[in-house]
Length: 108
Image (cartoon, rainbow, N blue to C red; front, side, top):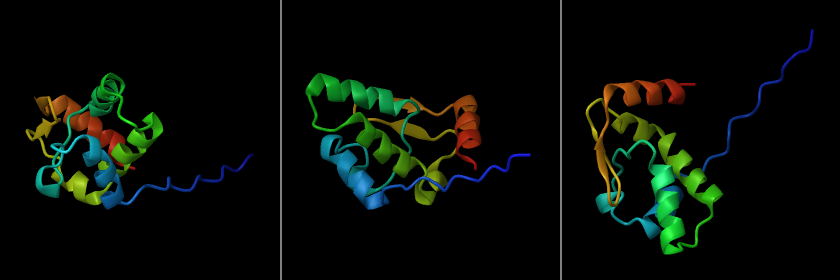
């Protein structure tokens, strides 16, 4: 029988570094420097804005920043059923199905 060696956890950016890089291009995403819930699917919307506006950020860097923010304990504590998810241009209400799906995916 072959023994599987577990993979080490991903190295993530520091929360401050990730939010600084994101707020460089989207300053209204985290008003007053405070975390707030982001809408589900925000990465695709942000990447569309990067292509349209020619922001100098790589897709991998955008994913790394959003992943670091989304997996941080402070951000996870903010996610609640019925919370509003904000983007610079869009605002959606988190529905029960997307909330349950997101929590299931985020729970190790």
